[in-house]
Length: 259
Image (cartoon, rainbow, N blue to C red):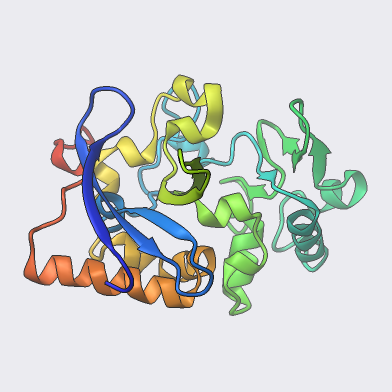
């Protein structure tokens, strides 16, 4: 478990199903982390292109937009520069909107400040549509996979981290706890409440064959660091093997409505 893994059970804000958390101390710098045991041990998987309903106000699986309908907000200039550099390497065979991206740029100022990727015809400029010769999907992601790179090196941070989310909580003693959990509707702000569908609430997305802490291991290592990841993974593995069984995810406990 490492230094001070602590188990607690809690409900999400307001009434709702109980989920389980564990607390760790980062061996690298002493940062206190609280991690969502329920989500990390769940069998969630991405349904892009195979049942994802999208994040519009009505189900739209035929558009194959996934969660790319509103563009990707970037946390800072380093993230933006990395994506812009990756875009330069994309060819017209990789990227449906390459010509427009080179002419107009791939980022625009967002209404609330900061930057987000440009929208084209109702979705991110990097999203190839189903009509594209290479098929639908993020041009940055697909090009990285074809070249043997991890898409984390080319995509905006928020994109490769999804559906994981790191947030921060101020404690009464003046310290700060880093919280690692799932990116729920609230992560999108007020707009998330209008989604007709969201994957971490959908039973059909909890049909993977391995737990999230294994299927998203590269992403988790990048977010928390290798040493802390090893501690978290060892703790979760011990829970799976010797019990008590972690609290199951609320969505995984509901029957799927998918035909």
